[in-house]
Amino acid sequence: MSGRTNGYARGRARRDQIIEAATELFARTGYRTATILEIADHAGISRTGLLHHFASKELLLEAVLAKRDLDNDARFVTTDEPLSGVRRLVDLAEHNATVPHIVGLFAVLSAESGDPGHPAHAYFVQRYQRTYDSFAASLQRVQEAGLLAPDVDVDHAARALIALMDGLQVQWLLQPDAIDMAADLRAEIQRLLLVPLDD
Amino acid sequence: MSGRTNGYARGRARRDQIIEAATELFARTGYRTATILEIADHAGISRTGLLHHFASKELLLEAVLAKRDLDNDARFVTTDEPLSGVRRLVDLAEHNATVPHIVGLFAVLSAESGDPGHPAHAYFVQRYQRTYDSFAASLQRVQEAGLLAPDVDVDHAARALIALMDGLQVQWLLQPDAIDMAADLRAEIQRLLLVPLDD
Image (cartoon, rainbow over all chains, first blue to last red; front, side, top):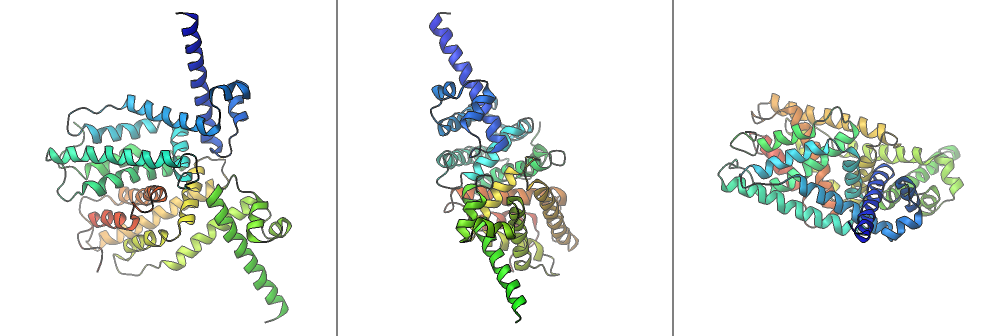
């Protein structure tokens, strides 16, 4: 490995370290309250060192959000099998139950960003559009395979499943031992299907 | 009216005015970011004047939350008719679409208060328990009247309906023109019933 490559690798590791620290602090104290200095402290670098990698808190927030999307895209892959898309949602809910601080961060940010002046507003508007498209496509494939209950409207069901996942997260964050997000989501998806969701 | 009664009435009007201002500011900038001084400015009184009525931001927050619950309890009354309870939920969703800053406040606060250190944590844990009890009781009455679809589990459906309402609020806050919360909720409740929801 050349010295230059080593430099890139170090820079990348440092960026990841900052993103990790920012994710934790945004989740714990909220995006608006967390300061660049606190995040730098938490990442174990100087304020100047952090600003070298991320020139503003807004840019750091974008990196935090993009990292989560990339991680989930890599983790949950859909196959050609008609139920693969809806099964993936239950897998995602199961995974979410292992990362409360990420779930908490997204719950707070998505609610805060209803304000058009919030720096993540455009991101969340686009993210919900993408999520809707993906859920609707998954349900469409179930329908085309003849496995969707006849009274199900794909457009409504896509919005309702997204809302169910988001809403269960709020209940789960408040009472983690009382709520099983994946079980409630699985039950709801099963009601949409003519066949068992699980093999 | 005696001078003393006038004093009470004035004090109460002043309290309501402060609660109104706090509700707006908490919704706009978040509970954690809003300061007592900003709220006092917004209510048109001095910081000392505000602190005479509410000794801390936590006590003011409690008053904001209690006010909303009282308002909704007064607005939405359930009758003996078996479908009255579930119809009330659709009425509530319709009403919520007229008060975006209140909906935004509750969305942010309920998400933030997943943190056990948040001043509204205990309130929201209790509030979700009360809401669950109320939804489950409404569904139970539908079931006892023989009007609930046979595959519906009351316990699961109560949690899922609360989650649906919360989740739709987040989507609606981001895209108010694209989401009809009451229509999606009505469609979901209708799927639970053996009879038409509306008369």
